[in-house]
Length: 137
Length: 156
Image (cartoon, rainbow over all chains, first blue to last red; front, side, top):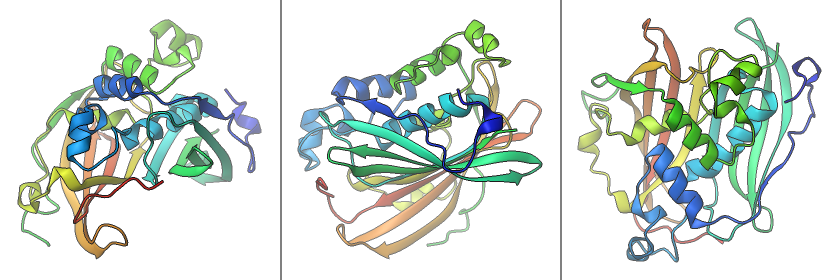
């Protein structure tokens, strides 16, 4: 975890890499979080829906980058996390989660850091863009 | 479309923040720290309990909470639903394992737009507000679902 007193604009979150996404990742996440939409685990359903294979729940890859950020700045310090889904994540993808502090400010009497985060897949296409705010006082 | 019901909160539902679910959830998200896994590790890190991962409140959405009033009238087709955005606002440190939260959902907004790939798109913004046992609001979760007019094929 970072030394919160030292956190400043431009600091980079330690990268977190998922070397190869596998269908089991989606199944574990489904069991943990309850998203049993078959498009994420049943190939025949995915085919019926016009997809080439099952693909990840967007909240899985968003969750991976959120946990990386929480482990960097402290899980008790998160005040906001917002994610936008850009490209879907497919089995076999390599993911890279990264992030940077873009502002330090006061909010409701707390010193907070705003982060811009992203999850890249494949050749660097953006799968998820996210913003987060952490208390750093 | 704006119905009479849109914007009103639905029936409250209980969302227990369970240690076992937090452990599974964190592990499935490639967590590396042990603070998500045991009360001892959390205590060693100076925490009063095992914290929830930032996206954990989404789990409440999958346990069939009472729907937001007006949701049934939207005529959504699950084959063509995309999750566009998701936001979680914590009004203080996130609740830890053992907390018993009460959630209520409302349709915050519904609108339509012409899409580039998928024909006409309907945006449905649902808000879930969670209160702790003292009745204080602790989390606001906001989800944007997009219904496309047709199957959206693989982007890449």
